[in-house]
Amino acid sequence: MSSPKRRIETDVLNRMYVPYHLGRLMSDYEVTLVNDNSMRSPQMQEFYVRFKGPEETPFQGGLWKIHVELPDQYPYKSPSIGFVNRIFHPNIDELSGSVCLDVINQTWSPMYDMINIFEVFLPQLLRYPNPTDPLNGEAAALLMREPKSYEAKVKEYVLKYASKDAADEADEDSDVDDEMSSVGSYESGEDEEPAGNMEEI
Image 1 (tube, rainbow, N blue to C red):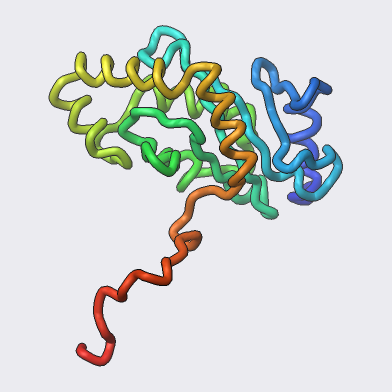
Image 2: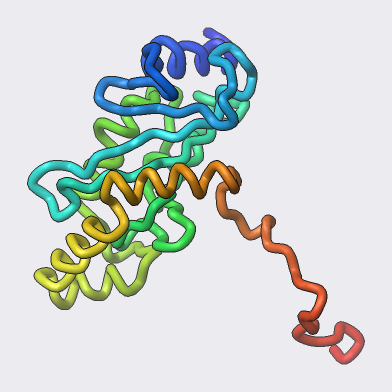
């Protein structure tokens, strides 16, 4: 069986990257390495993929920038993925871009690769949202109570946040901050007071 580093090279270089000005192509996807890493560097494990909304869905016509980070243990451990520009969907956190998708978060298998994520898993998630397991409660409630209003709001977000211009702006924003959102990245300001005192308990 091949090593995780070897599998990363296979998935990332052989299946995803084709020489392309300021990025790479993976089938119909534009891929950009973080920090302009060379393709053979160990940091090739972090990149962005431009992802188009599936046709015949309210997401059609949208263009999202997806941040992908491959762990050292890939393919035995799933990649981290997140939407950089905003999207209105029950299973995607609107602010952080985190994705709630069982196949990535819980049932990942080394048999899957990056192509599966962009050609199967994400399109299926957008086509068939699961409002019973939401990261965005507002989107879930709207989908369950008023499906037509949900569809209209999705289309509004596509126009406002998922145009080519919005994806380009997300490119510029991510050049400034290439960190995925996490609880551990929160920094407390100096003028903030603690919520309570441990001695009082």
